Image (tube, rainbow, N blue to C red):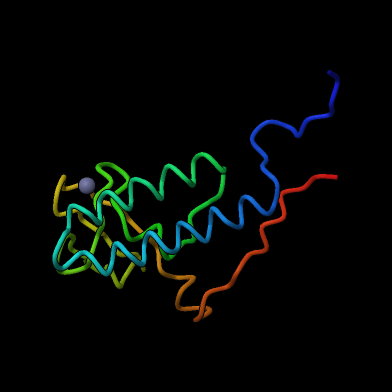
Length: 126
Ligand SMILES: [Zn+2]
């Protein structure tokens, strides 16, 4: 059977759309469950990351800040992570409360343009 297949790694648009929607929902649930079941939130993050990987979709930037890349914990400022701002160099340091991993996020862009700019995800090359 000779059938033209899509190049590796690219999934049809409808699939990536569903994947992104599911990631959003999972993070929403993680936030909802966090006060009572923080371990459930971590599980939601795990599932969301797996979906992102499987469908090759990038996490929206605002969601990227909400989990630890090292241990996968759901991060809530003041609860499961610490955020420190460096106003001179315009970045914030997010320290994971579980594994202590530090991540630097520059926030220059966030000052320049408030409100999220949605990048169209058109990966088609044809
Ligand atoms: Zn961590």
